[in-house]
Amino acid sequence: MKTIERRSSCPINYSVEIFGDKWMLLLLRDLMFNGKNSFLEFRASDEKISSAVLTEKLNTLLNEGIVSKITSPKNASKFLYLLTDKGIEMIPFMVEFLNWGSRYNPDGGPKTLLEGIKKNKKKLITELQDKLRGQRQSLTEKQAHTF
Image 1 (cartoon, helix red, strand yellow):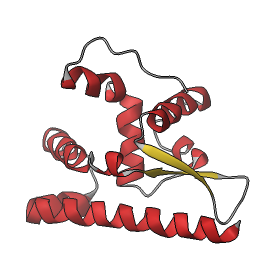
Image 2: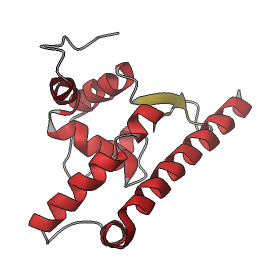
Image 3: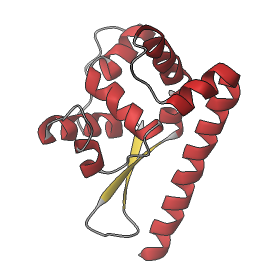
């Protein structure tokens, strides 16, 4: 297991060392907001991440305990990446990031999420977190029953 060598004990440094590039934030976006959880689904994103970079970033997320990896209940040769509680705790940050980006780039953004943020941001965050925990539990239970 490859670990990130920390430059300091600063909490901001810790966060930047994990999430300090565009690919990590885009992977979190896809996991949290776009319902993606497989290698091929991540590769199909508009930003066109390479297989090598995607593998590296997924391994970092795994090693840091932000995602877990399970075998797909529908296809034993396919792996699914699911946010752990540690990853799900990033949702408030990502919602703020999304909100800020939509404010200064009005041409883009998921309309439903943006409307939810405007209407009741706290409720939206709780609903997203509950949904992801439920999906993780359901997929994990299905996986356990297939083997």
